[in-house]
Image (cartoon, rainbow, N blue to C red; front, side, top):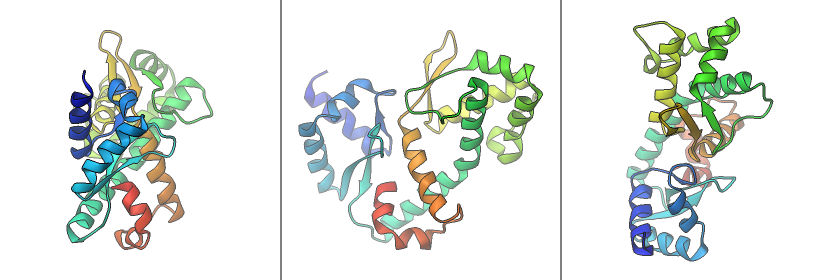
Length: 215
């Protein structure tokens, strides 16, 4: 892929509101990690009132607004509402991953998640089974006709994939990896904790620097 193609591909993803990370688009992520590439992308985004941003651990690049007018704040409101909607199920999924793997540290971008071993662990452990069933009480996004552990876990993986936090890397073995968007999630979660998990749009607007980092 030429630099011109990398530029075009990266710009398209960023303007679509997607994240460029090593897990989803390794070639574009490596290209965008170069300062000259960043400057080139940032200069173009600047013409559109946007800028190139990077997550706290520099694991994913995304686009944010430079200035926030009425139209931009409407997008902030939509994005923030989506973030809040995913928090509870995401925290539960991360907890499930940690308990299955018997780890104390939260998963990070690029970390592998295997469906089959997780299903085995859930079916053999009543506590994990109950944790999985709780997804159905959180949101209709996790509703399944068949209440088996297999169906419920498949639905959870599908939703995490749809939200952009997981990507399937091996369909034969149902192997997934966390994307760089997970780093963005941690950033948003930290912000919400500053407001005791109950921030409103008005409170976000009072912190314009953070608002620009989120959207």
